[in-house]
Length: 340
Image (cartoon, rainbow, N blue to C red; front, side):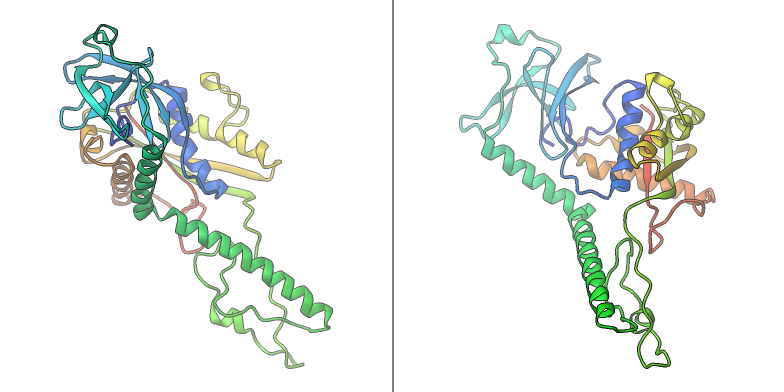
């Protein structure tokens, strides 16, 4: 997150369709329960307004852990958080870091200065920066820990079924789930009562019901939160438009070939029916610039925005009870779409 992604959470200006697709895609990652280390961007275009009012077009290459930003002509640029300005970039002699030339993007012809196009850090430096940013991300989000829990649950579930088949072939009438076993889609260990079972007349515990598969099927209701700010009210899309984008079968709005519901219904072989409760626009307590702090990691800015939006919904008495939960009371899928 060396330049554009360095806290520059809300400065992107992309089309309505792109905003919906990128932001609502967050929820799809949770639904698929996969481990993602980066969302690759291959020249993602955006616009940024410099403090002097100059609007510049930029392209981003990389992911949220390491990205490089350049102009459409191919000149690499760097962002100065203190000045909130993009400058044309140079390289340190060892190739480990970009340095600012002090020349503002959009205010000067870089070709006249002899600045080279396509500057890149060396591979070792890029890898080190990506690792450092991932460690910062993991310290807050703990994604790796959750993924390990999913792997452990899957392994224990397979071992449980194997042992159950073995016991049944041996003529045993029952099998107790080992105490402390974590089964798929459970947030906490199986209770002692369930693990120990109760004795039958023959003196053996009853055969425990097999735990559910963690393949997600059936009806799932997620939450999509619309957010706006005092200084940037939500005017681009309406609640009804986002609701259609999320939930309407055979959706064709904004040139799309289906809604989020359609996509997952088709991809799951008609086994998953994923709908979203789309909120009204939630006015968070701070202006957009507060959450767009370029001195703070963009992931932390995003979490701050989400937390504040949830606090407003809770204070409003929003009904979360209709949402699908995992064991332990966690909402299975949550998306956020913000104005600007």
